[in-house]
Length: 326
Image 1: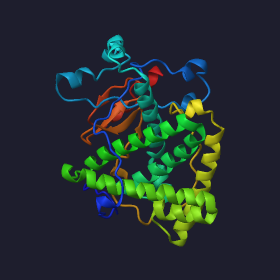
Image 2 (image 1 turned 90 degrees about the horizontal axis):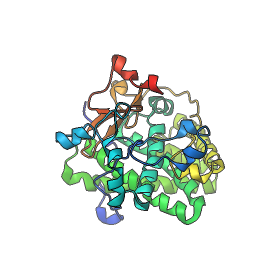
Image 3 (image 1 turned 120 degrees about the vertical axis):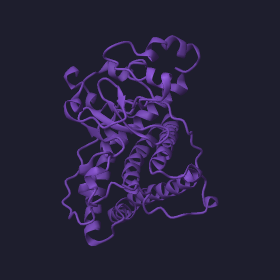
Image 4 (image 1 turned 90 degrees about the vertical axis):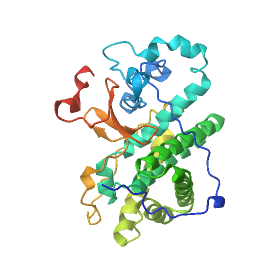
């Protein structure tokens, strides 16, 4: 199956500012970091919304493989050397902000990585569609963080950093030449910024404007049916924004985001590709596993309980491995 970037046209890089992106991403482990104060003070409220950060891929070489462990069967090597990382300055404020911004972003990614949402919106599972739906939820979090003053502004910037880092590896996943990754990143950034500005304008200028923005930037469908779907989605986005405003900032800032139920939309599946069910969404859940991409843009899967990662998609009895330990 050939993967495509979608309908992103080629623009001159000089027409906009490209955000500087770190090409190496860090991954945290639930067993390698101190427990969140939020979880300590209240283990029940929004416990279902806590976001785990994806562990590293299975890795290459001895070092890479040694970091891939089942955390339920023995001590995590990162946790074992926790004192050393702290002494070297890795577990400082910057590290905390990195982990929290990663969790905030991954909450958006995990929520939108559901095939039924794409079917409901009449969207293919293309690069463009995945980026557009993810951007809509990042935008909602961005609006919520704007209410938190200086701390919120810092987190806004960090979440966008995580978005662009993830975008880089998603572009690599499309088998794009490494020499053109920066060019495509700049194009995707511009498309995302345009969508955010359109959604902002829609909130300010009324439901019809937001509906049109959703139809154009999320659905790429401005037909009567597309506008109908967009009106439902626009109402959902406004409802979600109100819902997020009611959630205490301490939860939002750590990536514990209680997203509401996606709206029920009945759409004619006329533009769904034949290979629709074969496409894996990044962050999609399969039993007790989720999909993820490593820095090279290579797809892997990690277990939600054991945090062990594998290259091949689990099937059969392995699909629900670890659930009995929850």
